[in-house]
Length: 259
Length: 322
Image 1 (cartoon, rainbow over the protein chains, first blue to last red):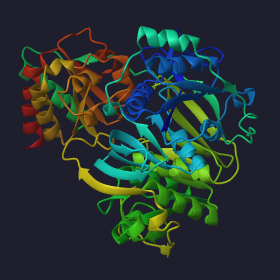
Image 2: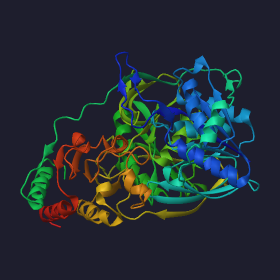
Image 3: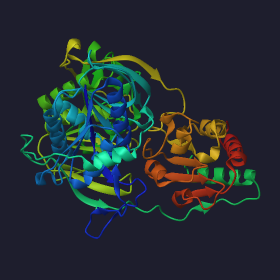
């Protein structure tokens, strides 16, 4: 069996991100693996160990995304690959998804492709569904548990968390899934894992290597801005007792038509 | 007038609230055709007209009874290809993201996803999106050609007041895939009960580490019940096993923007803020007056939550006549 995890690096979750004078988002902290991908990587390691198979981690991006690849290798994935090409600067999700799908095809024999729920920095998961369609695989987003998986019969059964409740679904493999935090307890790298990952050779493929051209861009970022500041100072509700404060707060919320 | 298609999502015979919002926004951009896929959808068709559709294209078939991405995506792609509308909109729900992302790939067009604002400039969609966990807003524009896709964040747009006297032309289409061409099957659906649907909730009462344990959510739930709200939770309480993950608000949970967010015993870590900072009014209740949550809040109460919440619940009961 072969499982592929698709990842990227993002600013550390606690990082303060602001838009600088040139109009670009900027932060000081180090890049880390996209927080949702910790669950994707862990799930791939668990599957690979249970089914004695192979697991690959893949990114499309500049060298800074090696950070996410190395984290995946250090936790226990077998090999990594990176796609980069100057034509990918400012790529929209469609071109990104085409590159991911082509790289998965180049890796070959994928039974299951695992994404974290979304890319926390781009605030986007649309590539997950685009990759699935480009590969012609079934797609299951919002997966909170893999209930059964059989790589020889090529079937999977998962629990999905939808807005109204839990859906249990079966699918044929190969399939693409996007996983939630609930799916596992994330594994962290061991010292041996980190040393192994540091020495790993990671191939870099261009669009030409994947038989792709950049095509025409469909969507484009025109500006980044800092969100509006929350107006005004907090009003602390004072009172001699909990009951007095509660009465004041309830009155204020009703008066302000919040309730 | 622009020709606007809205994929109308429904559950248990009703449009989901976020789809009503999508119909509402669509009506401000042009003439809306609602796309209603399912089995036994006549009530949903009526509702789509009531919420602003001028026309409906429906597909009523057993293969579409349970939501599955493949048959829905294949059909959406075909309907859009055959009719070539200007804009294709849907709610950025779990199902909406799957279907719209998939169809955009089928048609090789771009998509503006999970947008919080959307307008048309020179015939092209221009959207605002929250990036870097809501720390930055990005303005993204459609620059390609072909039908322009966008998914809309829950509660970012207004639904029209429903008018059941509205109706219009309904046409039918057949599904693209037959059952044996579909790789997925729904085995079961377990509907969640009470206080969990955070995405649609107008009021959310959330508990953090300060609730102290699973039982500490009792006063949080009681307040939510009186206000008709949903119950949220910080990551710490979910990781501690005090409340299921479905309640988690924040970076690795749900992103919400209710009218009122009451944070009880939540310090307000940046990861939590990522999930709730766009709430319209934030109330912070915490015994530590230095907690970062007070920087986001409109109203603050520095008090022990176990003493304060029952009093607040009582105060609302009296005032709301419950």
